[in-house]
Length: 296
Image 1 (cartoon, rainbow, N blue to C red):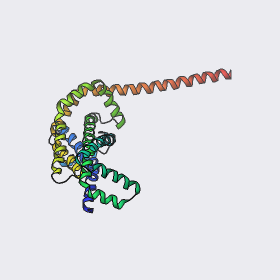
Image 2 (tube, one colour):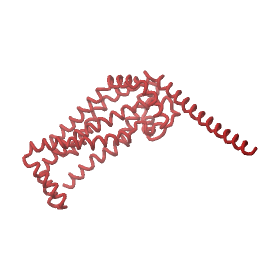
Image 3 (cartoon, helix red, strand yellow):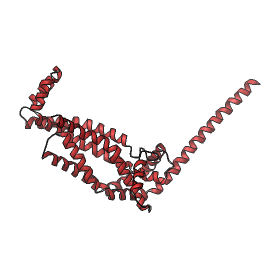
Image 4 (cartoon, rainbow, N blue to C red):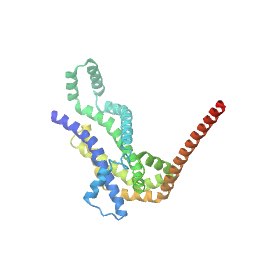
């Protein structure tokens, strides 16, 4: 029992650590190395490791907006699992005759603080309660991860901008990217989905396939979630070379737009500071004139 619970907790915990610290930096390093092939840079393991660690430093730190994407997907999971729990209640009430009674007993025991009987009740009805958790959480997890991948993927175009214009700091690079994207958003989205839709098909197949394999052995939702995520990652890896080529093509098709936006954004900032300086000078001159009039 303890081993089962421990393994149940370790799977998702490992993913939370591995994804931001290993998988995402590895994808970044591979993306940069793939772009390097276009620039005639000879790949090597040493160079790959340099790219891997470059993900954590400027100008590439935060290039995928990982934290923002993660928090948004976490919010999506929380909201959608609440929505799907309504349907899970209906389905389980029709499948299991005593589901509603068990639910009521769980609520009563939780309110009374009777942990011994609560643990026994959950143990006696573990399969039924796991099915309920599967129905409530797995579809929500699917949507949350889908949105997470989508947001990370959209932001991956910034990698090429920061390679081409490496002197941009994080905030300014994001400003330039959004500034340029605003005028060509529709074209970029059309090209993106036209080229990369297989990535999300593979994600769906891998996620459902991993869960399907897991269901042959268990209905434990954390095992199923871990297998679903692992399956989706495994299948999507096969599309990565095509994905990187597609993203490079999209960026290069609009590189002049990004460069023009970078120059215009710089000019706008300079003009803004010049206006601020002129305004300060004007106020200073006005104050000096006022003081001179008072001294006369």
